Image 1 (tube, rainbow, N blue to C red):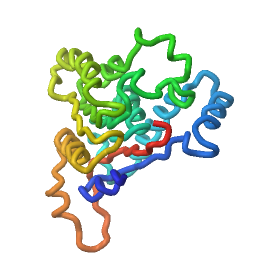
Image 2 (image 1 turned 60 degrees about the vertical axis):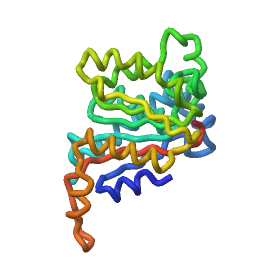
Image 3 (image 1 turned 90 degrees about the horizontal axis):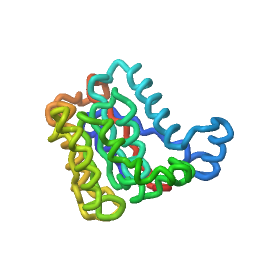
Image 4 (image 1 turned 90 degrees about the vertical axis):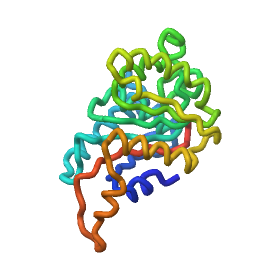
Length: 232
């Protein structure tokens, strides 16, 4: 998968952070190390903190338009996108593909996400509440009838009531590409058009203005990209 490369070719500036659970001996050992170093932290909490630090960095770059920040992610990356959007107001638009929007639709209670401790709070606490925190900013849930699909509509529908209150009914949506736990080209095109529209980004105009030789070009909307599939 080459989301960042494809977005760069559209004219975006991208940052593709490596999730901390990909380091060392993998998710379980990284979750244990986090618990030792930061008692009380969840893995997803660290991922959300790391997302904010990525935005801090992007805002130091003169070529970045800090008013047009967005994020896109697949699987594990989709989970990061959901919580980054909910707790980071600087993000203007998000795309969530095959992350399992419901807490019982994927492995949210694994030790590197919300941990076993979350189980006792389900279903009183669910991710439609997290979705509601994003309103009224644009958010697109995408699925392939694996982690997400028709069952995801209940979560979108519940969050939509908050979007309605804030005048943003058209800013949350669900797209089922029916391609399993993947992010096929047709679905990626839908995602990129969602970003272009809500970030007011004219892909064709930017591409036609690119210099023919290697020079710096600035002012384009940056995108945080998460597309790692490990540990879903």
